[in-house]
Image 1 (tube, rainbow, N blue to C red):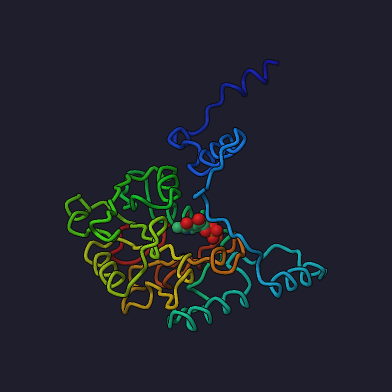
Image 2 (cartoon, rainbow, N blue to C red):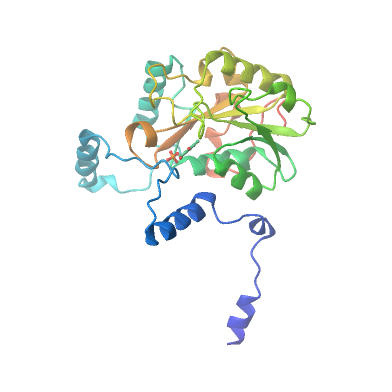
Amino acid sequence: MQNLQKHSDICPANRVSQIKEYYFSKKLKEVADMNAKGLDVISLGIGSPDRPPHIRTIDALCEDSRKEDAHGYQPYIGIPALREAFSDWYKRWYGVELNPKTEIQPLIGSKEGILHISLAFLNPGDGVLVPNPGYPTYTSVSKLAEAHIINYELTEKNGWLPDFEAIEKNDLSNVKLMWVNYPHMPTGTPASINLFERLVAFGKKHNIIIVNDNPYSFILNEKPLSILSVPGAKDICIEMNSMSKAHNILRSYFHTIPEHFDLCKRQRLWLCLPVRNGMKV
Ligand SMILES: Cc1ncc(COP(=O)(O)O)c(C=O)c1O
């Protein structure tokens, strides 16, 4: 009994007190309550796929899961064949060359990537630019990292694009990361090379890492774009990509990390900060 009393006095870490219930978790409960009351709610909540993955994907997964040697721990940076496939895919669809050995990191979903990138770059108090409206995970993870969140407003008047002049009115000297997501959730604003060029230039001007979260480039879109197709983007950009939305394969995500960020080599110590001359790490 004494032990129980003692344990109940243990408080969670301070950073946890900043985190509220995840937006979509709360919203889905509200929707379930309303449905239970007989209301016919059209949920515009999480974009969970409404179709299964391709039958060949399912067959390959079934076939491989029957193999006796297919159940060990994976290498920290994923198997070479997977990284090579991601690299070929980037070349084929975006015209971007990525070194499969050093510039691609497979993940189990975007939240893992957003957390890793934030923990790798942000010390408590460091600035991070977060879009509003935008994917709520950028905010919750930034809070976990105890970073200083600076929201940048996306407005209809501005075509839901970043207003760089308005952003520059903030003190950016302590800002290390900027989350961007084009094609944009929730507005559906498409990406464009012009926007990506401006983002790369902005990142270089202020020495801020631009992270483009790019899970929607194949949705209702004939010309998928990557920020990494802009010359010089690898100097300052990371891109996250996903098979959830375009291929209905959930929780398979990867991000591209320019070689010089030196993160892939430090997989076992993901929290080690990458080193690059001139970068605010
Ligand atoms: C902007 C954005 N990024 C990432 C994700 C999640 O992607 P994944 O399923 O690959 O974790 C979503 C899902 O809704 C999203 O809207």
